[in-house]
Structure formats: structure tokens, C-alpha cells
Amino acid sequence: MVYRRRFNLIIAAQAILWVSGCTNIGPGTIARDRFDYVDAISDSWKRQTLLNTVKMRYADAPVFVDVSSIVNQYSLAARVDGALSWDAVLPGNSQMLAGSGIYADRPTITYQPLRGDKFTRSLMTPIPPASVVSLIQSRWPVDMVLRICAQSVNGMYNRMAGQLTAQPGDLDFYRLIDMLERIQKSRAWSMRVEKNAEGKATAAAVIFRQKGVEAEMAAEVDSVKKLLGLDADEHEFEVVYGEPAANDMEIAILTRSMMEILSELASYIDIPASHLAEHRATADIAIEEDTEAAVGVGPLIRIRSSPQRPDDAFVAVKYREHWFWIDDCDIKSKKVFSFLMFLFTLAETGMPEQVPVLTIPTR
Image 1 (spheres, rainbow, N blue to C red):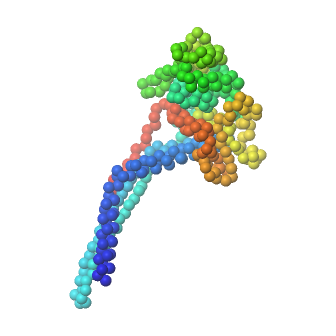
Image 2 (cartoon, rainbow, N blue to C red):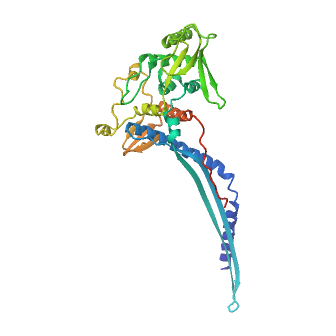
Image 3 (cartoon, rainbow, N blue to C red):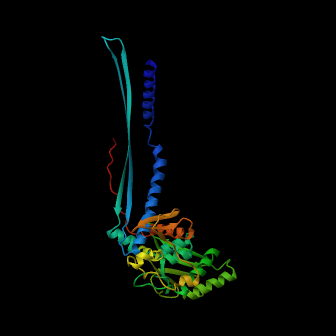
């Protein structure tokens, strides 16, 4: 009996020491929480974007919710109880030692729906042409940037999906991006972007290099100038928004808004045949005899669908009892979708929104 009491005392004391040793939980939580929340936010952001893209095909209103702040509060409390007693009538004594601990993790997460002025600025405002130039200058593939962001370049139209405006792209547009892709790889051009005091890109120019350019690539540059209707003797051209160009010294890009980009990408979704037959989703977004197939560039993105949940998906969402996803082995579609996520940061224009003020108790 004595040994059992001693054993219980040792176990209780160790438990109390363990709880007391966990009081230093502050620094240790940073590495764990930071990466856990990054993974959770990234995954939810991808799923939200894919879901809203799918909803565009079903004539459903897209809804975006931002995570504006995360505050995590930890609390730890420990208590030790002890008692000794003797019985005056019957010989013997008793001892008691007990401990208890309370650990609490109380995250405070603030969600903010995208609406009003912020909705207009983020989703309805066309991407500035200077931002498009910045993306190309940052070594994003020019063909992907223009196929996603540009509606037209100097009057040459990209593929457009929509119930009222659906039309295939001009052959000259695909010829243009094909030549620009080779020029980008050879570094036969450079770009200049001017920024304001807030760091926003306000103006841009494309400069075709003259020195150190091989004859074959110089001929490619001349073909681009001719296709764009630019002055053949000049080498620097201003990039502006609109259509058409005002003169032969401008490259006029009619850019898309994020809403238009989502609508365009939605046209590549593999909609279930039953949903099309029941008119649950729009069928006239897809363009018959698309120029993309004619020139062999392939679909911009591939979003699959199935009644069963996919086993190996880069991102997947369930909508109307069907799963929609991007295959994790489809590297091209993954790049386009990741680029779409990056574009949302460029769509943020105007004054930054104020973060809500939170009061967190210290106990």
C-alpha cells in the first residue's frame, strides 16, 4: 500500500511538472501556426476561385470572401492540490496530491465579403496594360499572359467566350503571340514600366533591341512590327489601353477584367452532359471550330468533372452533386490556374481597405 501511494505521488508530480513546463508556448507556436494557416488559406482560396469559375457556367452569382485577419490566442492554467490527515481514533494516516491543467486555443478569424466598391475594383476593372507589360517583363510566358489578359492587340482579337460575344480568335492574334514568344526567349526586346509614388504601374513601353540580335530574330521583329502596323524604322513603342491604336507608335491592348477572365476560363470546363441537356449550364459558351484547335495551341486550361471525387487533384470542389477539378499531373492547367490567383493581386487598385480593430483579452 505504501509503495502504491508513493507511485501515485510520483505520477501526479510528473503530470504537474509536465503541465508547468508547457507554459512557454509562445515562440513554439509560430512555426507551426504560420505554415498551417498558410496551407489552409491557400487551399480555401484555390477552391473558392475554382468554385466561382464553375458557377459562371451555371449562370450563378460568384461570391468572394477574404480572410482579412487572423489572431490566435493561447491560454494555459495549472493547479496543484495537496492534503495530509491523521485519524486520532484509529491509527493510520492518508496523503493526497493532485494536479490539473487547462489548455485553450482560441483563434479569431475575420472574414470580409467582396462587395461594393471593392468588388467593382477587383473584378470589374480591366487590368492595366502596364501591369500586363510588368508580367511579361517578369518572365511570365507572353503567350499565356496575352491569351488570358488581352481581348485584343492593335485590332487583332483573342478568343472570346460568352453568350452574346462568343467568337473564335483571329489567326493573326495567334501568329502574333507565337512570334512574341520566340522574341521573348531570345531576349530581343526589353520593356520599361513607369510607376507613381505609390508604386503602381502607370505607363509602359516596349523596346526592340538592335544590337546583338541575330538576323533571323531581327526578321521576326520586323514581322511583328508589320503585323501590329508599327513604324518599321522605330524601335520603342508606347503601350496604351484601348482599341484601336491612335498611330503607328502605339501598341494598344484592350485588357480584360477578372470577371471576363473567369468567364473565359469557365468556357473550358467539362460540363456534365446531363446538366447541358437539362439547361442547367450554358452550352453556347463553347466555340465551334475554335481557332485554337486550328492553329494547334490547345486549350488554355482543362477543368474536368465527375460524379465521383477525384483521387489526385490539384484543386477540387463539389457543385450540384458533381466534382470539378484540375488534375495534379496537368502542369499546363496548374500554371494557368496559379497565374489566375496571382492576377487577383494585380486587380487590387485604389486605396487599401482598413483592417478591423480587434480587442483580444490577455487572460
